[in-house]
Length: 82
Picture (cartoon, rainbow, N blue to C red):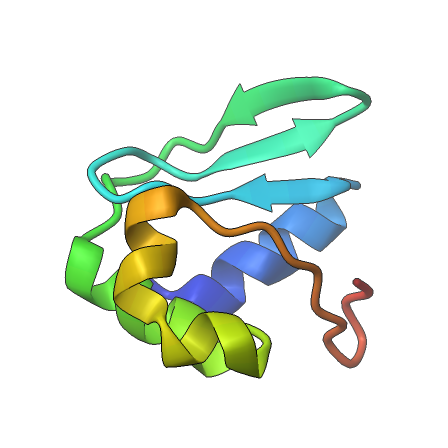
């Protein structure tokens, strides 16, 4: 899965949130409603690597725990928003 393309798609769709869970397709929050993206399920290894690369340091340092418990954070991307 190309996470950067997915984030651009989410911004283009006006999504306020992007939800990732390994073994499931990504989901977008658009207008307060959760909508599943027509996409293959997310591979746990790819999700772990992507999350570690963009997460705040405290989450990235305990990525396995964060993946087990779930993690919530926001991140700004140039040209895409937060």
